[in-house]
Image (cartoon, rainbow, N blue to C red; front, top):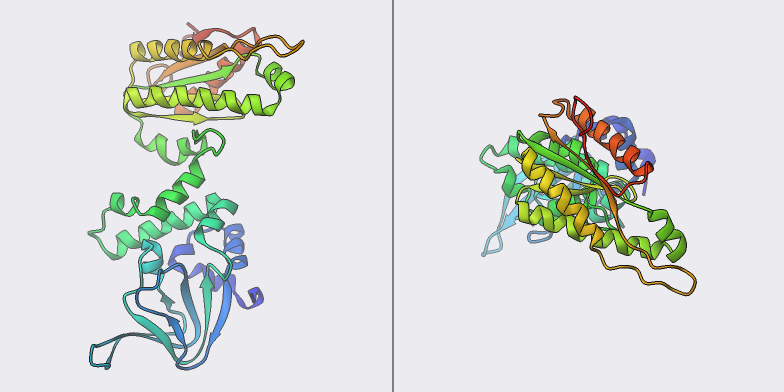
Length: 330
């Protein structure tokens, strides 16, 4: 890999990377490669998965189809500064033509040899998410009839979304999803219900982290089922054992009922049995809930105030359901 040859200004001219900040450009460069092709050497073949794309920095590349009679029809010719295959790459498609060097050429390849979009998404999900977003803009810009929802159903797009937004331990969404996606689609009213298990440190200290992990998986399942039954919302993990629900179109009466349902479901979780001198562990939880925009129109403030109320109530002994609103706690 010859990173010294890759100029950041050149990378910034590529549509997929044009809006990335310097630190993300540096990551792209570190995961790219410069390759050389002699005249007549193949760059890619028709039917091959477009797992990479190329920026031509020297020489010429011709793209062509071969007819049944063996004759060739040149479809396009690329020269220095042209990007090759980025549209197929963004779509996760297969090339529909062959490409070879029309003269001795040098190209920047992304991702470089040994890297895939999946492996890069595991390293830096935020950066790959930004590249993904640029790819959607590029596709919708080049083909106005492309439906963004269709684009987002592409398997690798779904995988990157999952890796960027899903907590691997519980399958709940990460908090980053709120600012990136949820805040854009909130409906009036929407409920924010936060939960923190009581005495969780006692469970982990006495039974180990595996017991804590198992408990969080069970709590996550309860929350996912609530979202499924409500029909429109998200179950999220904010921090290690602080989780919550955002329910779109959920009014005050429904929110109160669901908060009670959530607390009761956690309290009904199977007891962790005694082991030797270690006593049995019964589950309970602290729940703080609120309704946007009724209780506070500023979403960020509402979120932080409800979170503060959750912690204060938990520190005071927990095992309680409490509501936040602008006028004070109810």
